[in-house]
Image (spheres, one colour):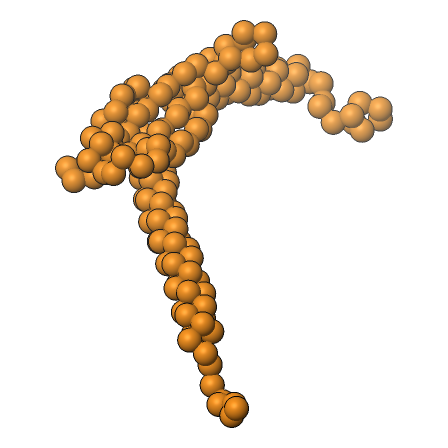
Length: 177
C-alpha cells in the first residue's frame, strides 16, 4: 500500500462546510454593522435638526409655541414636536418666565410602515433647554433697576451739595482739625 500525499474527500468536504459557515457568520456581521451605521447616521441627522430647531427658537425665528408632529421639510423623513412647559420647583413654586422647551425629532410613521415588518421602533432624539419666555419683561426689569440706581445717585449727589453748602466739610480729616 502506498500512501499518497494530499487530502481525502471527507477532509475537503469538512473544510468547505467550515468555510461556508464562517462566510455566513461574517455576512451577518457585515449586515448588522451596515444597519447600525445607517442608524447612527440617521441619529446624527436627527440631532443636528433638533439643535437647529432649538437655535431657531432661541434666535426668535420660530415662535415659542408648542407644535405637534410638523414635517421638518418637504422630503425630510423627520417630524418635529415642540413642547413648552412652565418650570416649577420642589413645592410647586413657579419661576416667573422660565420655561422648559423640549424639541423632539422623530421618524415619520408612514415611512416605517412601508419598510419590512421587522423594522425597529422609530428613531427619536430629544433636546431640553430652560429659557426665559418673556425677554421683554427681563429688559423692563433691568431698565427699572437702572432708573432706581439713577434716582439713588441723584439723591446722594443732592445730599453732598447740601452738606457742603452748609459749610460742613465732607473730609473727615478737616473736621478733626
